[in-house]
Image (cartoon, rainbow, N blue to C red; front, side, top):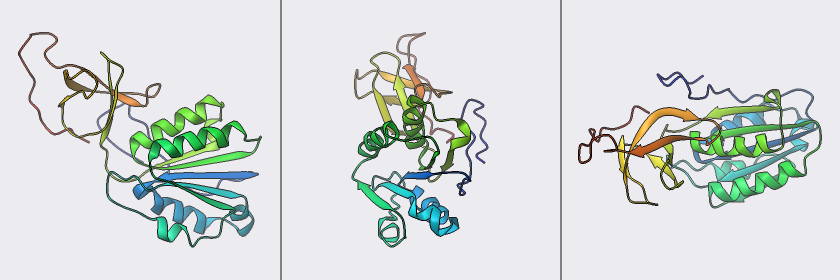
Length: 201
Protein backbone atom coordinates (compact mmCIF):
# COMPACT_ATOMS: atom_id res chain seq x y z
CA UNK A 1 0.00 0.00 0.00
CA UNK A 2 1.25 3.47 -0.84
CA UNK A 3 1.23 5.94 2.06
CA UNK A 4 1.60 9.65 1.26
CA UNK A 5 0.31 12.94 2.60
CA UNK A 6 -1.90 13.39 -0.47
CA UNK A 7 -5.32 12.03 0.53
CA UNK A 8 -6.65 12.05 -3.04
CA UNK A 9 -3.82 9.85 -4.28
CA UNK A 10 -4.92 6.27 -5.00
CA UNK A 11 -4.20 3.40 -2.63
CA UNK A 12 -2.61 0.57 -4.57
CA UNK A 13 -2.80 -3.21 -4.33
CA UNK A 14 -0.28 -6.01 -4.57
CA UNK A 15 -0.87 -8.15 -7.64
CA UNK A 16 -2.09 -11.67 -6.94
CA UNK A 17 -4.13 -14.12 -9.04
CA UNK A 18 -7.85 -13.32 -8.85
CA UNK A 19 -10.28 -16.21 -8.65
CA UNK A 20 -13.06 -16.81 -11.13
CA UNK A 21 -11.32 -15.18 -14.06
CA UNK A 22 -12.05 -16.65 -17.48
CA UNK A 23 -9.41 -14.40 -19.02
CA UNK A 24 -6.54 -12.49 -17.43
CA UNK A 25 -5.15 -9.29 -18.97
CA UNK A 26 -1.83 -8.29 -17.39
CA UNK A 27 -0.54 -4.85 -18.43
CA UNK A 28 2.60 -3.18 -17.18
CA UNK A 29 5.41 -0.84 -18.06
CA UNK A 30 9.03 -0.41 -17.08
CA UNK A 31 9.64 -1.45 -13.48
CA UNK A 32 6.10 -2.89 -13.37
CA UNK A 33 7.50 -5.92 -15.17
CA UNK A 34 8.75 -7.27 -11.83
CA UNK A 35 5.20 -7.40 -10.45
CA UNK A 36 4.01 -9.04 -13.68
CA UNK A 37 6.65 -11.77 -13.33
CA UNK A 38 5.69 -12.40 -9.69
CA UNK A 39 2.00 -12.56 -10.62
CA UNK A 40 2.54 -15.08 -13.42
CA UNK A 41 4.69 -17.22 -11.11
CA UNK A 42 1.82 -17.29 -8.58
CA UNK A 43 -0.79 -18.31 -11.16
CA UNK A 44 -1.91 -21.86 -11.77
CA UNK A 45 -1.02 -23.43 -15.15
CA UNK A 46 -4.62 -23.01 -16.35
CA UNK A 47 -4.62 -19.31 -15.37
CA UNK A 48 -1.37 -18.77 -17.29
CA UNK A 49 -2.92 -20.36 -20.37
CA UNK A 50 -5.71 -17.77 -20.18
CA UNK A 51 -3.37 -14.81 -19.61
CA UNK A 52 -2.32 -12.18 -22.13
CA UNK A 53 0.61 -9.96 -21.17
CA UNK A 54 0.96 -6.40 -22.47
CA UNK A 55 4.29 -4.73 -21.69
CA UNK A 56 5.66 -1.28 -22.52
CA UNK A 57 9.43 -0.84 -22.50
CA UNK A 58 9.03 2.91 -21.83
CA UNK A 59 10.30 3.47 -18.32
CA UNK A 60 10.81 6.47 -16.03
CA UNK A 61 13.05 4.42 -13.72
CA UNK A 62 15.17 2.75 -16.42
CA UNK A 63 14.03 -0.79 -15.54
CA UNK A 64 13.31 -3.22 -18.38
CA UNK A 65 11.97 -6.73 -17.71
CA UNK A 66 11.24 -7.68 -21.31
CA UNK A 67 13.82 -10.46 -21.55
CA UNK A 68 12.44 -12.20 -18.46
CA UNK A 69 8.84 -11.75 -19.62
CA UNK A 70 9.68 -13.40 -22.94
CA UNK A 71 10.50 -16.63 -21.09
CA UNK A 72 7.26 -17.02 -19.10
CA UNK A 73 4.43 -19.36 -20.04
CA UNK A 74 1.34 -17.37 -21.02
CA UNK A 75 -1.21 -17.29 -23.82
CA UNK A 76 0.56 -14.32 -25.37
CA UNK A 77 2.96 -11.42 -24.89
CA UNK A 78 2.50 -8.11 -26.71
CA UNK A 79 5.35 -5.60 -26.50
CA UNK A 80 5.01 -1.84 -27.07
CA UNK A 81 7.62 0.92 -27.44
CA UNK A 82 5.55 3.44 -25.47
CA UNK A 83 3.02 3.55 -22.68
CA UNK A 84 0.49 5.25 -24.96
CA UNK A 85 0.77 2.47 -27.54
CA UNK A 86 0.02 -0.07 -24.81
CA UNK A 87 -2.95 1.98 -23.56
CA UNK A 88 -4.34 2.11 -27.10
CA UNK A 89 -4.05 -1.69 -27.37
CA UNK A 90 -5.61 -2.10 -23.93
CA UNK A 91 -8.66 -0.13 -25.10
CA UNK A 92 -9.05 -2.63 -27.96
CA UNK A 93 -8.61 -5.68 -25.72
CA UNK A 94 -11.11 -4.40 -23.18
CA UNK A 95 -13.55 -3.37 -25.89
CA UNK A 96 -13.64 -7.00 -27.05
CA UNK A 97 -13.58 -8.51 -23.54
CA UNK A 98 -16.32 -10.74 -22.15
CA UNK A 99 -17.69 -11.24 -18.67
CA UNK A 100 -15.08 -12.84 -16.40
CA UNK A 101 -12.13 -10.75 -17.58
CA UNK A 102 -9.66 -9.82 -14.85
CA UNK A 103 -7.29 -6.87 -15.31
CA UNK A 104 -3.91 -6.46 -13.58
CA UNK A 105 -1.93 -3.21 -13.89
CA UNK A 106 1.61 -2.45 -12.72
CA UNK A 107 3.93 0.47 -13.34
CA UNK A 108 4.15 4.20 -12.74
CA UNK A 109 1.31 6.20 -11.28
CA UNK A 110 0.64 7.94 -14.59
CA UNK A 111 0.55 4.62 -16.45
CA UNK A 112 -1.88 3.08 -13.97
CA UNK A 113 -4.07 6.18 -14.04
CA UNK A 114 -4.42 6.22 -17.83
CA UNK A 115 -4.91 2.43 -17.92
CA UNK A 116 -7.73 2.80 -15.38
CA UNK A 117 -9.43 5.23 -17.75
CA UNK A 118 -9.56 2.37 -20.28
CA UNK A 119 -11.02 0.07 -17.63
CA UNK A 120 -13.60 2.65 -16.58
CA UNK A 121 -14.66 3.13 -20.21
CA UNK A 122 -15.96 -0.46 -20.26
CA UNK A 123 -17.29 -0.35 -16.67
CA UNK A 124 -14.99 -2.99 -15.20
CA UNK A 125 -15.91 -3.47 -11.56
CA UNK A 126 -13.35 -2.51 -8.91
CA UNK A 127 -13.09 -6.15 -7.79
CA UNK A 128 -12.06 -7.13 -11.35
CA UNK A 129 -8.97 -4.88 -11.35
CA UNK A 130 -5.76 -4.95 -9.29
CA UNK A 131 -3.18 -2.13 -9.48
CA UNK A 132 0.37 -2.28 -8.15
CA UNK A 133 2.54 0.81 -8.18
CA UNK A 134 6.16 0.26 -9.20
CA UNK A 135 9.05 2.67 -9.59
CA UNK A 136 9.16 6.37 -8.80
CA UNK A 137 6.22 8.61 -7.96
CA UNK A 138 6.89 11.19 -10.66
CA UNK A 139 3.74 13.11 -11.42
CA UNK A 140 1.53 13.40 -14.48
CA UNK A 141 0.23 16.97 -14.62
CA UNK A 142 -2.73 18.44 -16.50
CA UNK A 143 -2.53 22.12 -17.46
CA UNK A 144 -5.74 23.90 -16.49
CA UNK A 145 -5.05 26.57 -19.13
CA UNK A 146 -4.38 24.64 -22.35
CA UNK A 147 -5.41 21.04 -21.52
CA UNK A 148 -1.87 19.66 -22.07
CA UNK A 149 -0.71 16.61 -20.11
CA UNK A 150 2.94 16.46 -19.02
CA UNK A 151 4.59 13.26 -17.82
CA UNK A 152 7.48 12.79 -15.41
CA UNK A 153 7.15 16.10 -13.52
CA UNK A 154 9.44 16.25 -10.48
CA UNK A 155 9.37 19.95 -9.43
CA UNK A 156 6.68 22.16 -7.91
CA UNK A 157 7.07 24.79 -10.67
CA UNK A 158 7.65 23.86 -14.31
CA UNK A 159 7.00 25.26 -17.79
CA UNK A 160 4.01 23.80 -19.62
CA UNK A 161 5.14 22.50 -23.03
CA UNK A 162 1.72 23.41 -24.47
CA UNK A 163 1.18 27.05 -23.53
CA UNK A 164 4.66 27.88 -22.12
CA UNK A 165 3.15 29.22 -18.88
CA UNK A 166 4.99 28.61 -15.63
CA UNK A 167 2.74 26.25 -13.68
CA UNK A 168 2.62 25.30 -10.03
CA UNK A 169 1.64 21.69 -9.36
CA UNK A 170 -1.20 21.30 -6.87
CA UNK A 171 -1.26 18.29 -4.54
CA UNK A 172 -4.77 17.15 -5.46
CA UNK A 173 -4.86 14.04 -7.69
CA UNK A 174 -7.84 13.78 -10.07
CA UNK A 175 -8.93 10.22 -10.86
CA UNK A 176 -11.05 11.54 -13.72
CA UNK A 177 -8.02 13.17 -15.37
CA UNK A 178 -5.51 10.62 -14.01
CA UNK A 179 -3.27 13.56 -13.20
CA UNK A 180 -2.38 16.35 -10.81
CA UNK A 181 -3.52 19.85 -11.73
CA UNK A 182 -1.13 22.57 -12.86
CA UNK A 183 -2.21 26.21 -12.60
CA UNK A 184 -0.47 29.48 -13.50
CA UNK A 185 2.26 29.94 -10.93
CA UNK A 186 1.92 33.73 -10.59
CA UNK A 187 -1.85 33.83 -11.12
CA UNK A 188 -2.58 35.68 -7.86
CA UNK A 189 0.32 38.16 -7.94
CA UNK A 190 1.90 38.62 -11.39
CA UNK A 191 5.66 38.10 -11.22
CA UNK A 192 5.55 36.53 -7.75
CA UNK A 193 6.60 32.89 -8.15
CA UNK A 194 6.58 30.11 -5.54
CA UNK A 195 9.79 28.26 -4.80
CA UNK A 196 10.74 25.73 -7.50
CA UNK A 197 11.22 22.97 -4.92
CA UNK A 198 11.41 19.29 -5.66
CA UNK A 199 8.04 17.64 -5.27
CA UNK A 200 7.31 15.35 -2.33
CA UNK A 201 6.73 12.31 -4.51
